[in-house]
Image (cartoon, rainbow, N blue to C red; front, side):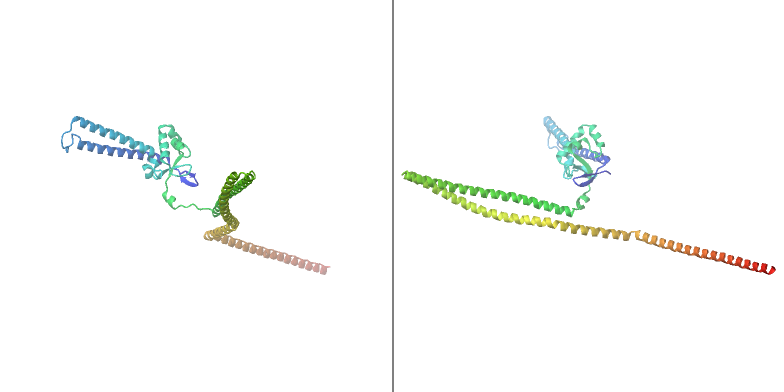
Length: 370
C-alpha cells in the first residue's frame, strides 16, 4: 500500500477499490433512506387520504388532490435535499468521513496541513464528478486523486485512530532548545521595541515641557516690553499667558518624571531579560553535549546488548577455537616432518659409515695380499 507524507505525518493511501466501494455504500445508504421515507409517505397517504380506514369523515376531491400534491412536492424536495447533501457534503463531517468511508476506515484529508476536509472541500471534490470520464481518468495518478481531489487539494487515506491517539512524535531535544532560544530572542526583540516606544513617549513629554518653558519665557519678555511701553494692561495679559504656560510646564514635567521612572524600570527588566537570554544561549552547548553523551552511551549499551544476545560472540569463539586447533595441527605436522628428516639423515649417515668401514676392510685385505 502506497504512503504519502503530509505536514510531517505519514499516511497510507486508500486503495482505488476501497474508495469505489465507499461511494457505492453512500449511494446505497441514501437510496435506502429515500425508500424508507417513501414508505412513510405512502403509509401517511393510506391512513389520512379518503381511502384510509380511519378517516373520520369524507374529504372533498379538491382537498384530497391538494393533500396528495403537497405530499408529492415534499417528497421531491426531501429527496433532492437528501441526495444533494449526501453526495456533495457527506465527506465534510468532523473527521472527513462519509458513511461509506467511516465503514471502510477511510478519510479525506487536505494536502496542505493533513487535517480532515471541510464541507467546502467535500463539495468541490464531489461536484467535479460531473466532469466524467475525465474525473476518473485523473484517478490513475500516483496519489490516486480524482479531478475533484486535485481541485480541492485533498487525498483519501486509511483512517487509523489508534495511531492518532497513541503515536507521539518524538521531538529532538536539541531542536527544542534551539526553538526556546529563538523564542526568547523574539520576546527580547519585542520587549526592546516596547521600551523604545516608551522612550519615545518620554521624549514627547520632555519636548512638551521644554516648549512650555520656552513659551513662558517669551510671554515674560513680552510683559517686560509692555511695561517699558507703559502698557500695563498688555503686561497683565502677558503675565497671565506666562502663568498658564508655567502651569502647563509643571504638568508636563510631572508626566515626564513619571515616564522617566517607567522607562528606567523597563530598561532594568530588559537588561535582566537580555542576561537570561545570554545565559540560556551559553548553557545550550553544555546541555547539548550532555544530551549527546547520554544518547551515545545509551546507543553503545543497546549495541552491546544486541551483540551479547546475538550469536556473534559464539561465532568468534568458534573461529578462535578452529584457529587454535589449526595452529596445533600445523605445529605437530612440522615436528613430525623434522623427526622424519632427522631419521632420514641418520639412515644416510649410517649407510655412509658402513660403506667407509667396508672400504677400510677391503684396503686392509689388499695390503695383506700384496
